[in-house]
Length: 281
Length: 288
Ligand SMILES: [Zn+2]
Image 1 (cartoon, rainbow over the protein chains, first blue to last red):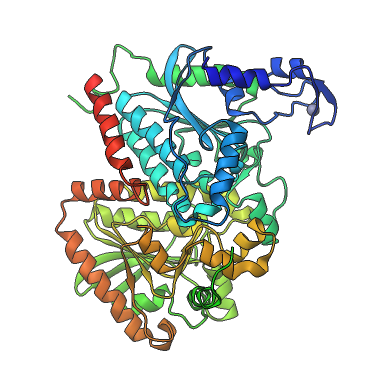
Image 2: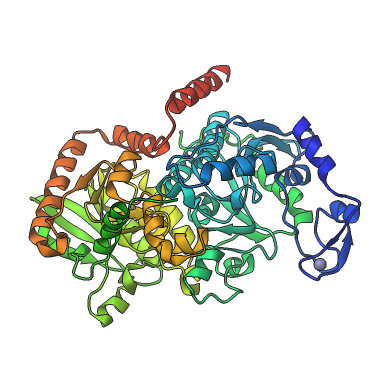
């Protein structure tokens, strides 16, 4: 565990009672942690901080962060944006709305991306796009699979066109990983919207989702301000699954094991064919 | 956040003209610019989307493929064209035709004119996000020149779904933005009346997009806007296409595809970042 990670663990108010947003029952903090922050009464999956996600997902102590030193970037000099970025950095202790690095899951080395909702709603601006693109490029070079936990309100409005251009950029980088014959698993968590869904989130070779995660192309605020009719059941993991857009809905307690099996399937060397030799006589 | 009133008006003029109901749409440019246009229909999976047109044609005798959003003018036509808001099957139709072009070595021309992709429940049920994501990813692999022109509204994900190109141009009175200025004002400042301020802050004008490195050039329009002299506007577009294709046709396909990757990979990036990252990757490769 890194120092920052340990520090964040200490901040978890384990002694407190927390109200479940699903069933409104009070849950004991420690017990909630033990159940990976899934309500024991109704199964509601609480949203996670990036470090909680690291702890619940990877082999203990195996996470190594990449590109932790990216500078803040305000390409449009958008009103009040610089202040907002600095406040988000202070509040979350991470450098932008995605954490990337290498880790082991069930002993298998993998690239890992985890989006951070606490950082301006997990929205994608230049730095998020850059870190995701680097994750794909680095893993293509190192021949590692990639797992990304998506969580995002959508595009970073304050970066407008620059934010929009992170969609093709990340989509292209994910293509590099595919060309290197590596697996990309996208895990859609509550909530995943907008520019992230219409780029790397829905480009996973395998797409998983947590139960009841909300997701969709138009973000909730856009739906609200344009007064668009959107039945609440549409923008959910279950709806996307029903319509063939997602491979599996996986409860959090089974996620580690599911990822481990998938990663093993993708990376284990067999005697018949190494992944590099396909197509040769 | 205070901008000079004349600047607010000038930028808003762009937005208003980009949405002008007499403005030439994709098929108007197609008629004016290409010979023997043959429109192709359907995505072979679900249906045919009127908000997206795709087909074959000749540009001064050179075979090319054309894709583009399509708006309508009469009420019935607007509805049939879904106000230029393309659906998943529209993006998949465009990709089908672009792949055909790539296979036969024909350049691709893409016209962008959409307030945004369709995002209602019906579009969600057929994977609007997936369709737009896949289009972008696949466009990076097509080994033929791709030239993109924003002719009216460049609305967010709906635009970039056919917006990956070796050269990207905007017409003088078009806009390109991650969100409509009205929505931006409502979400960010909770006041849709600040739409003009949002339009300026979003830097959605062609001049701003050029300065950000998102586009390669601005296509001039007749005074008063493209609708006042559509033939003249089309001549400017045609000239731009011919020049761009002449440059791109000389580039070997593998170089073209690599350059397209680098173009979008380092678009609007801070100075020096590209070189730094190249050094990191070099080091990694050596250690392996
Ligand atoms: Zn509950």
